[in-house]
Length: 109
Image (cartoon, rainbow, N blue to C red; front, side, top):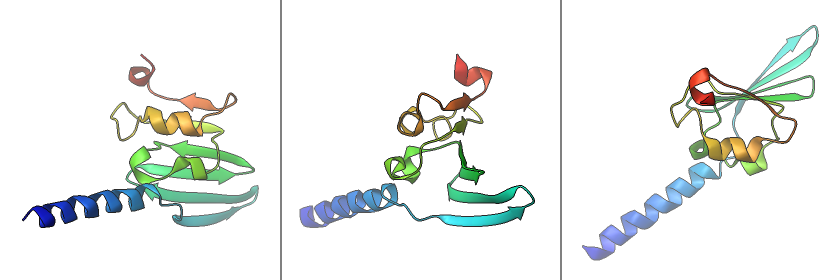
């Protein structure tokens, strides 16, 4: 029984590691008169918009991706204060000194 429990715990850690290490995501490209808009679905509520050399993240959540392997953000949009939308760990990785952070009043306090 101990071996079975140990095996299940080990499998759980491996599965979490695989999810966190994910770097390939579904992407749609939309051609506009001003250039291509690339929309990448990371998971849950997390999206990346890439347009005219700018990278915009919506609700980056650490459980879904290894953000150290993804482009830094020009803008980060946070829709509300729940931890799966307002994840300070993800923001810290994606943010530069030029990143604009757009969030609700509740998140700002």
